[in-house]
Length: 293
Ligand code: NAP
Image 1 (cartoon, rainbow, N blue to C red):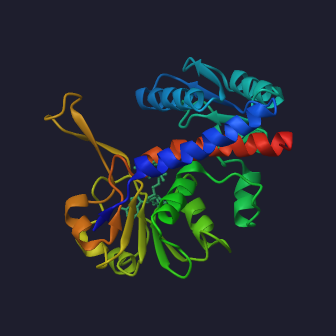
Image 2 (image 1 turned 135 degrees about the horizontal axis):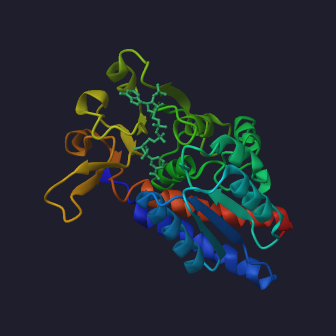
């Protein structure tokens, strides 16, 4: 069994991004990313701050808007429209989930699809389904694909089983890996909470990707000998031995699954660092496409 080192692969992506940012700057263009947070959810605040920090480290122009939880839908939409019109901003991300009074779908649809670096706008979802490379693919699925390719795993012809069908991870990941061409061409099965005989289905996977948000759900019985396992899950579980009182664990019961795998991602340090790396890469792509550089 070999561990897939997400931190190292994310570092390599950042190196490419930094070089692309420098090339743009040499032409007088600075890629800009705007991140908007509504409310004070501690996990969301931590994500937004790390995105802002990474943008700055890579030489991007970073704009951070931290708005109070009582911000109205109208005010949020007005801010998104202002960012759409701002020529210094090439990527816009509104941190999910917003407070319950905000209609998230309406906010996403307001983002200029050319600046939708999260890839959630319906136009970008359609472009992914249409194999149109000018679209934006959500960062976590893109990161999973990159982890596979960087580890020498070509999905072409492999049976990939994706556990979970969310619009953030499972569904776009299935589309990405079944797309024609490099990094795709896989035979994809998607399973979810209504699937029957789950272990029987997941045991067929050459590559098993778990994205369900259930700590340690994937057990040895779900995995065939020699499979590649990608664990997208980020779950907080109580852990009195830790200073914070919790630990972060994945959707895979690592200790019993790892010995059966050829390759597996750890949590943390697997998919997690890739998500932010692909966000930065998407922002550079948006800048290149908008400016024609
Ligand atoms: P989500 O929107 O809650 O979707 C979960 C999916 O898993 C749903 O399709 C659900 O099925 C399925 N599911 C839930 N329980 C199941 C069960 N017992 N058996 C079979 N399927 C089950 O979650 P998400 O946003 O995709 O996130 C999934 C996990 O990935 C979470 O732990 C999240 O924190 C993590 N995540 C990590 C990153 C990262 O950067 N690494 C990014 C995003 C998410 P139904 O559709 O039938 O309900």
